[in-house]
Length: 247
Image (cartoon, rainbow, N blue to C red):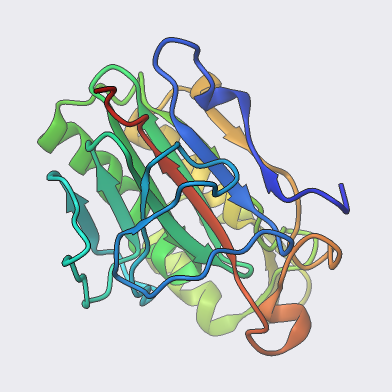
């Protein structure tokens, strides 16, 4: 595991309707400007001759939809925390360092999504919002959407205080399922569990949801961690895209 560059899951590897994807580690890097589509030829885990799109992340719930071909002139300068595309050869990417990367694929309608979710985005409903967009805009049947929840701060290490807990109580009906009390004013938060609960509540099928059960705080050899390191020394990149159209 210590030498792993990227992590992939079988959920997106259907031989007929595959999606290129990866969850990155600290050994896997790609340099590019935020908001610019760039060629990702040779990028491990990426589709050959694909474009990779990353944007400014703001811990919100806004979703960027890319439903046209990209060019080198494109610039996306605002802030989004979820990216959706139905364009062959476009990989949508998010950066994390304890927050949760979530990848989605609708193999029937040919749509993929990449989501960055910290506790604010999760409580704000970024995952349900993205699923609802897939359904309303692309006609996705949420029972057929495949989701994978990537490496992030685990319930073993992710301690939150009273302000976060109060937001959870106000915004998450099933909040008690995803917290482990430690004292009167702190608890451990299961962000991955929260996101899975939300996806199930939206109609996703349990067998269509996979989770990479690795904690970014625990595994210093594999991941950057803002909580562990006290600053942003680096971020992991996770991405998903449809295969390019053959000419």
